[in-house]
Image 1 (cartoon, rainbow, N blue to C red):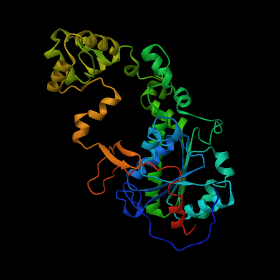
Image 2 (tube, helix red, strand yellow):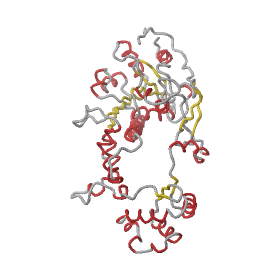
Image 3 (cartoon, one colour):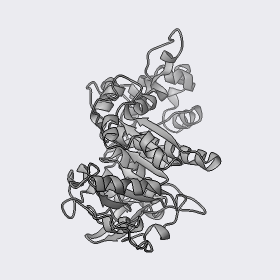
Image 4 (cartoon, rainbow, N blue to C red):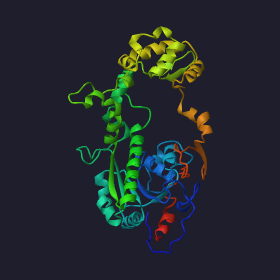
Amino acid sequence: MAFNFTPIMMKQEAEAAGRGGPATRTGPLAGVRVVDLTAMVMGPYCTQIMADMGADVIKVEPPAGDDTRYISVGPVPGLSGVFVNVNRGKRSVVLDLRSEQGAAAIRALIERADVFIHSMRFKAIARLGLDYGSVAAVNPRIIYTNCYGYGRRGPDRDLTAYDDTIQAACGLPAVQQMLTGEASYVGTIMADKVTGLTALYATMMALYNREKTGEGQEVEVGMFETMASFMLVEHANGAMFEPALGPAVYPRTVAPNRRPYRTKDGKIAALIYNDKQWSAFMEAVRPEWASEKYATLERRARNIDAVYALVASTLQERTTQEWLTLFRQLDIPAAAVRAPADLFDDPHLDAAGFFEKVNTPQGPVRFPGVPTWFSRTPGRVAGPAPELGAHTQEVLAELGLS
């Protein structure tokens, strides 16, 4: 797509559909402008949260658009459910960054941006002339965030990475095998989302530092490094020490009997964990378990799989609701096992106003809302996801280009 970059008079920023244009946004990031060259889920999830928190996120797409536009069902082609959710409230600009005019437009965007974020491999972003050095030469105060599969400091820096391969590399299927007997991925794109959250907090830390010092900087977030850190929070365990005091695994999470318990009529998750909870459960249900073998958390931890098996045999005796009622009385954490679809009718989420209905050109959308709460600067769903290139003319006009 080609543009004639003739300077024109700056015009007031237009209202976008739904929440409003950048001049009307509210939230703790109101006034922050983000140039977003990310695709798929990792980077877009990061910048979706920024948009919900008030940032003006300008999603720069190639003429074919972000592949995530086409990977699941949607009301029209190019607006799949996954894309709509992680790109809500953003403004879509289509640019051919390999062309002279596209390069000029992205430089104009960078000049006025607070954050530049991308999810390309280093060689690809460098070929476009958008490596950190080049971008900082245009805007020294910019926070420049790289979202990579593997960080640049290791030999795997040029490898392609997706959620499944990173799950495998960081050990998730291996611990699933310890738990279930078969190596498997977890049923959510955990690596993408955890890395997106990590990119968010890293970018926010850099922005905070800039507020104190006035200095921009480059940030790097690797999926593999992020998930290695995530997995080793508990699984480093005895392997952290020199010499090692045990294997790199946290036994409770991989105990074969750690699974939702069967009840008379369904399944329930419950964790009778600390000594107070265990004593309350024994007194109410199984006083005969008051033995030295299970008397303390430390002893139960050493026999955790046997503990899970004992509880499993007992919970089959009553219905799910009977156990939930008792566990609430005993202050023992428990929940019925449900499906993702059940969340749309959850009484707690409904009372908390979690879901937000947004009217879009394709019809109303019930978005999962912002999970955080601010007393002075609350965020909210930033608005509908953009159709491909819907804001190209609007954004270029703001830059004094046509």
